[in-house]
Length: 387
Image (tube, rainbow, N blue to C red; front, side):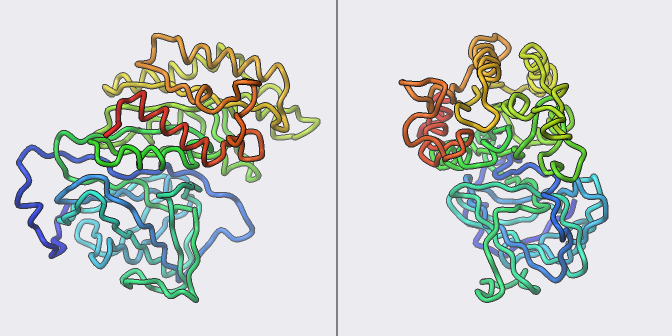
């Protein structure tokens, strides 16, 4: 890998000790984007503001075309006004199904800084690789035209978006005491609680890295374009997404879609009853697909209980029994280093099958913003990340 200098103030860099290491300071999953009428873009700039959680002296960036079927050319890639290079080149071709890491860039950052990663896509580009995420720290923008080097995007040609394309991970060369905590899951983790957790953990030695894709299941995946955006199954996702520099812990909050998706082919041809696992199959899946590989990586593994689903459109008592049984296993299994009891943090004391008052987003499956904050608080407390 090459090295470039961003000509910033290096007062921090000069003070750094030799005891440094690469640690992921921001991360996202890469998955199949929602199949719409148009899946190509041309002459467009993508911009992603990212808050730095650590001091550091160098940055490196990983870009992914994991779920693309065509090469993708990033004609320009910048962090603020500094070019990001790839083997010394200012543009890069992301091959389908592959990840690409940038050169290491000498770029001093301080905890609390916001950097902006901008990409310019000149020619027709397949936008198959990206993930929808939300939360107070997950803001993005696009603009028509080449504004990768611009300080500000033109207001009349730009709009905000929650789709993050191609950018997968940012690593910082930082103190060896710093580390990364991975939040792995589905749409509930693709939404706000990891961002609130990152805000609560700010000022500690822990970065919060999100690896979440809406609709994903532990044991199954959809291969039809209707539901392709629901992502890859756990055995495919996990080995790829756990490539996280400096990771010490992973919180796994996954499995509700395995329970609620199947409805029978008479209702939905893509959702047969044969997709409905037993609780025992889910437990074995978590052990074999997640826990054993994570332990082999030297990580602490924290289970995250599944949230209430009372009132969701496919709710029934059989699914609720599955959820309760699976949650009890997540709470008590000695496979885990501990359990973050998200269910306890957001459920009603009057009707434990349902969300507490004000904690339901309205669809009876996804939490409200208040509930996401409660989830983050439960995770921070369990992992002892309080400042």
